[in-house]
Image (spheres, rainbow, N blue to C red):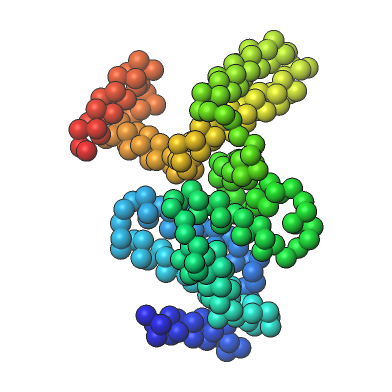
Length: 271
């Protein structure tokens, strides 16, 4: 395994050499950023597709982005792939004293709490250590995942509902506020509709944020949950297209509703 990885690292170094590939040579961390995001999502898609061969391929593409970024850093005189490996290895050992030390932990929840405590102590930037804990959640994260991370940070400081019932009460309250905002007469008046729509947008965000916390209470990743719902919808919609004798855009709403129920039943029967 080490030999194959070393060969791959040498391949990337060759591509970045003065007589290497013009495209690879002109890349920077910023230009590679989009590919890192794209490849990460393609890995997730392969995971959801439960296709080991595809997952192997996509993990390779993601590895390319890591090694290529490390080579860019090496060419800039900043660090190399060995430094990256050493850094993450040191971090993993440091954050697992229950494995590499004498500490004993009995549950995954205890491990998570300890992880955050150790992570906090490792912060080297005094401003980051003294600033708000929620500001350490990257804004570049997908919004649902960002909401989950922000909530987890707040909860780690004790800011939490007493029980799940309170979470549901909050969700019902936010949904009611959203419905009130949508039914506000200002939504119909040209001179006030823009401001009213902004209020609806805020209330909808509150509902989504609360739903994320419902997911958190049940240890469900809302991003993964939504992806599964999208996949389910796509599967049923494809079946509608497959079994319909007419283009879907030529059917009435009642016809589409009946076709949807039929497609839903056929997809369920395949499982």
